[in-house]
Length: 225
Image 1 (cartoon, rainbow, N blue to C red):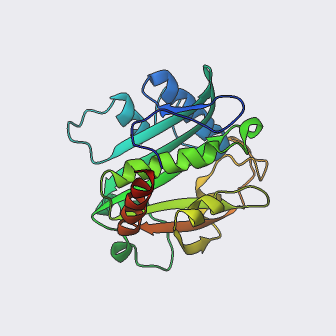
Image 2: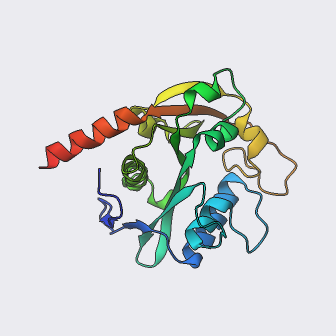
């Protein structure tokens, strides 16, 4: 894994740089992509809270969450993006899906979320998604999180399942209605914002113990010495 805060070039014949999103233009583009492919509730010109926090649009001097927003770009063209969030126990419990497990017991005091990520279809298969995934884990490990959570949709063809499995995440529960309730856009189902269609994708809710994340991080550092 790479050091948090670094700028990294993906292993591809055409150079792709992974960097933190800082400018509002970056964040608006991320919001547009994720809104288009995953659905969202923001009005035009607005950002969801986690991205607004990166932009400095929130008023709270001590925000309850911290956000890492990443951009993968070729030249000045964005070819991928990803978001991760750090938050406290009660917020994590409120953001967990309705399921059979005990959310109160599963959530730690400080928790990380592997939120939405996207790589342009023309740029997939070049390791960009892996770098975006690892960079977010590096960032969360630097905070010593208790737990890390994420959703991965299940579908035919490429998915995020291999990324979660390689990182040691445990599949907590298969969700048959999660995306149907939350997604207003889904390229796999062929529905877009404003359509009458409903997303029928199933999702897996993944969890990783923070101690395991830290142990993996330390092991990678020792190998690089």
